[in-house]
Structures are given as C-alpha cells and as structure tokens.
Length: 358
Ligand SMILES: *Cc1c(COP(=O)(O)O)cnc(C)c1O
Figure 1 (cartoon, rainbow, N blue to C red):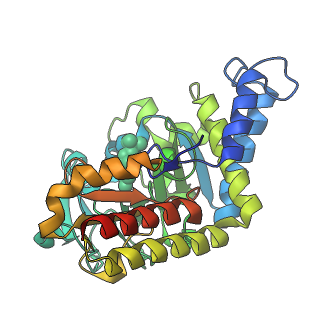
Figure 2 (figure 1 turned 45 degrees about the vertical axis):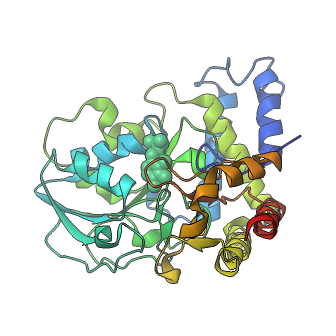
C-alpha cells in the first residue's frame, strides 16, 4: 500500500511516472534495451531528452532565447558554478535560510557578496523585501525555502541586473514569467522528478557574460549548452523520470492546475494549523507561507508530545512530517504529486490527536 508521502526531497512523484519509468527500466519502448543500457548517443535517448526539454519549455512558456540543461551535481553544484561563471567583482544575494546561506558561502570564494536582504533577524521566518542594487554582476534568490517554509510568489523585476533563482522546491508549482530571470535552476527531486539530475534554464546572452577566468570544462555553462547537456554521459534514467513527471503535469492541466492544487492543499493544512489549539505555524508573516513546505510546531505546553504525534501519524501511514533536523517541529512537504487526500489524512490525524490530548 502506498503511504501518504510528505517527504521534503526526494519527494512523492506521480504514480504514472513511476510506472512508466519502471517499464522503461525493463525495456525502453521497443529498443530491446533498458533505459539503463541504451547509449546516450542513440536516437532513442535523444528523443527522451528532447521531450524533457520541450516539456519544460512548453509548461513554463520559456521564450526562444533560453536553453534548458540537465546536469549532475545537484542544486548544490550550481551554488559554485554560478559565481565561477558570472561573478566578476560583486554579486547580490538574498539570505532566506540554509540553502541561500550555502550559496553565499560558495560565492564568497569568487568575490564580494552583498547580502541585499535577509530574514535572519527573525530566524528566517518570513520572506524579506528585496531592493535591487545596480552595481552587481547578478542577484541570487531562493524562491522557496524548503527548510524554513517561506516562499516568494512574485517574479522580481531587476531591470538590467541578471536575476538568478534557485527554484529547487517550487519549480512548476506556480506560473512564472521566465523572461524576468537570467537563470533558474534546481535539483529535480522536489517537484519535477527523481534525485540525480539538476535542471538549468539559462538565457543565452548569459554565455557572453562569463567572467574571464580559467573555468574547468565541466563547470562551464557554455560546455553544456554547446553539447546539448551531453558533453558527458547524462543521468539517463533520471532524465527519463523528469520527462514522465512533466508529461503527467501536462496531462493534469499544466502549471496552472498545479498552482490551483497547491493553493487548495496549503489552505487546507494552514487552516487546520491555525484552528487547532495544539499547533501553530512557524512562519510569522502569512503572506510568506510556502505552499510547498508547510512548517508547524506544537504550542509550548504540548511540546513533550512531539514523538507521540509522529508515531500516531506513522501509524496512519503518514511519512515525512518530521521537521528538518536544524529546526525541529513538523514539516509537511506538499509538492505537485501530493493530493488533497494526503492532506486530509494529516488533518484528520491532527484533529484526532486534539481530541485525545487537548
Ligand atoms: C534541496 C535544495 C537544494 C539542494 O539540492 P541538491 O540537489 O541536493 O544539491 C538547494 N536549494 C534548495 C532550495 C533546496 O530545496
């Protein structure tokens, strides 16, 4: 029996995508070979990666002057690749918690980092207002903060300053205006597929902005653009998983429908967190509440029941609601494949627990 999966990443994926990927592991179409065996230079695999790229372009309405890449190394590798390629003197970063803090650490190895906005003063429990500086090579934001449960729902207007966004955990969950961004990237494992592949959407003119420093071939965006993400062997099975996940998104009604469902799930769960006297949300500003990672804790006097609640939830087939080890409490990650039924089950548990203990 399938559980109610609220894992933060790798996350729940559509069953159809899992089944089709499982089939392709046995045999890719009529190729007489598995997706694990087929050459990445074959026409069969080329069709797979082309379809994955085309689905990205179609679902996000990506303009012509952008490339979609599938790389290895995780979103974490991008933290280094971005400054390596684009930082001349100074870059601006928005610090909204763990992931952006890590991105800042890498960028500091290549030049000056100006933290133009931060929510550290309130333990990253809100999304700060961003004022755009003019004299920087780029601005980096993390659109959804997977660990703290905050999210920005607008596409910032940064004028001529390239805007680079880590959208690891809210990609394809709301309509975005890609033309506002110079680059968007993320690990696939939170909304668009299995772990092991990183998507990069990059505006082609960024390749003219690469800094004049020796950059190892594999760490240069130009390499991967020129070779269609196949300078080296791509993670073939994972790219297939992305393709199948995006096919499912399209069949469900696209990003608009994903956004509608995300709002419905988030409203339901935040509604219960706000109603139930045992629980409270951790994000202090309701407008910053993430639709993808819903963080909450027990009110003070119930905090000794934390393990009991986790066990009660587990007994009801709910997995993945323990908060990140750095913040504690609870976190329910409600990515695209998460259903209203999953959330209802969690809400039921919260209500039953209230009856038993409050
Ligand atoms: C998970 C996550 C990362 C790290 O992704 P990896 O693919 O594991 O390197 C980076 N940024 C955000 C916002 C994340 O949620």
